[in-house]
Length: 415
Image (tube, rainbow, N blue to C red; front, side, top):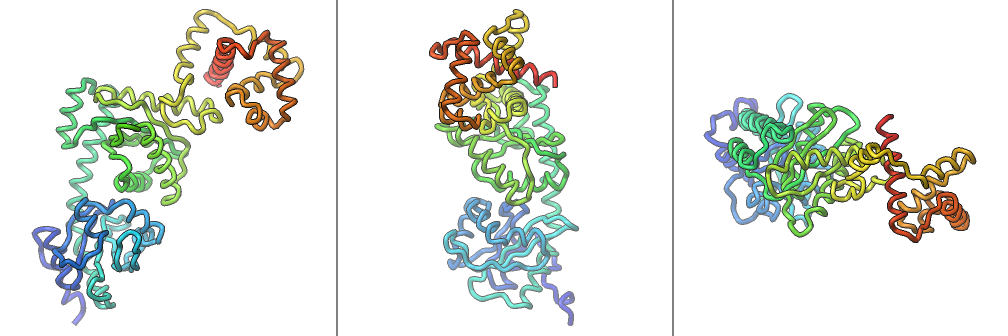
């Protein structure tokens, strides 16, 4: 008789746990069933002969991030996202992972989840791998029901996030109540992050980005949504002693993973300030957008800046420019240097700006300008003479530096 006639997985099961136990009985090995983001949905009852990776997954209700990372490096997860056949994973001692076989659960061209069979007692034979494929097909409808509920919850969560960042829900108590309505725990220490991509975020891209957000364990992503080419996150920060560093580390980690795992190239990323009061979520979002705007106008100077707090003087350029324009003030030193550059095709303004950008480090400034230190010293002497500037006077230096930046900022607004 055919395998289909003897398919042991066509019966109805009350729960995924019961289904996992049945697969385990048929294949004689421990079983875990995960969703597409490696969150544990069900597992079979087991004897003592199980590996540390399985124990950690059961305790944490999700696959540990170090296990996921190793499975990506080893090629198992990329294979599971492409193939409908069982994938054998050999023992990886450093993460406590024993021999196992995995298979993806598919609906059309989308992976809904995975079944993992641990080869604790014996190596699965070809006939058993065929049965594992049947189990994956039978699991599809169960996972579809879970996905429908999950998608509805995500839609409600994204709608809530938009209400908050667009100031339709402002008061902290109202925000807290909205979180309760969608059955989410509000963050106690948070920041809003914005990742800007080179292209519009498609449905397929969003699924991949959601996978990265769901599997990361560096921060907790409380809410997320997309806006054309932007991915917007509300993250809950665990490290109260160094939350800014945690933000920056996550941005760098997430940026790296989008390229390595899915070849998605980011244009830029930013983070608003870190707050505790829920009525500051919108404020943090606007600050993150400000960081992106400044990075676009000053790409070289802000290349390594991601957070609003790290913007320094760039936070105040719009306010200072408004005052300068209102007062009709012009910095005569800047005007003299600009005039001299135009008349002699020189670059004294660029020289002093880079010199001050590099905190007056002669070697770094000369390298950035691609000139000899002696040449730089000569230019600095001419700058002080022409601009009637004393570089030993911090007040003069800071004012000059700000007005050069304001001139560039004003110019960028008219491009």
